[in-house]
Amino acid sequence: MPSPEAISGQTLRIIDANLNRIGEGLRLLEDIARLLLNDAALTQQLKTMRHELVKGDWSFNKQLLQARNSEGDVGINIETPEQERQRELPLMVVANARRVQESLRTLEELAKIPDITPKLDSEKFKQARFNLYSIERNLLSKLLRQDKIRHIRGLYAIIDTQALKGRSHIEVASQIIHGGAKTIQLRDKLLTKKELLPIAQQLKNLCAEHNVLFIINDYLDLALAADANGLHLGQNDLPTKVARKLLPIDKILGCSTTTVDQAIIAEAEGADYIAVGSIYPTTSKEEARVIGLEGLHQIRQAVTLPLVAIGGITKDNAAEVIAAGANSVAVISAVLQAESPEEAAQQIVARLEAQSE
Image (tube, rainbow, N blue to C red; front, side, top):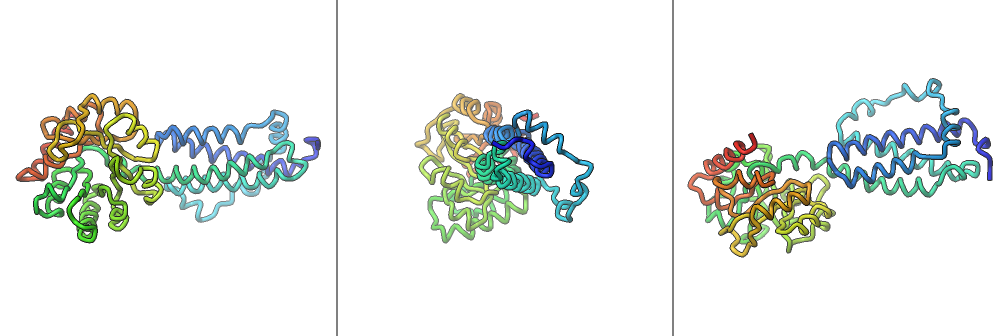
């Protein structure tokens, strides 16, 4: 086995610089996953990778420190115009992931040199590089959805074609938005998708004008065609894991649940928020299982995602639903059957705001 002294000082400087870049880049990605996204799984993956890659035996680390020459590094003060512009967080994630991946590839190749092989494992760096490709995608995906996920609060109004009883989707949605709704969902069991698409497109434009989320229920293809902000699925619809792969990485995904187990699975499979219900008996879905505030509380204890409570919610009970752990309340009849959907929405929003004070 070659002695450590066989590795040249210049080669040691390359190894040292790339190990430092790996540690620094992974630490930034780890902090984003931990402190910004509050994502325990991604944080653990990045932390484990960082520790496994930058650790080494003490004698070799001493060699690296001995060879280090920061003052003599001609690359320290060289910056490109692109580096100056890359200050937005998503770009920063991409830049640091690429930085780590490039360093991993450098070390992967260096580790194949006979004198270096005893100290560095080429296969370890190769595997880490491929793992980081997947982690980068997941991290960037969640980061791009963060602003949308923050909208999952307050009033979540479901525009159900059947409940509209012939009234205009756009007119009613406009009133509800002016009443303070943060999210509009289009749900339909009557019209063809050809008939629904122009309605969905108009709703998307309306919501975009008012900085309101637009979600489509059940239909992935319609959500894509209308460029909705997200998709909502029930337990008998397309599996959450499959939908997550098919949706663009910046689109959010909601999933309806009635049990703790369903909620835990939805979170693990990529849902961004979870609808929980039915909280109370409801005329909108008479066969719905009523889980009550206790069921909502149990699910709140089991998952970290935003919860949208649904089922029988009115201005009179909305506040207690939020108090039980929901981030948002979804309503259909409470606003669509009101003489003035705008006033009905305002009344619910007022109760929710009073609860949060």
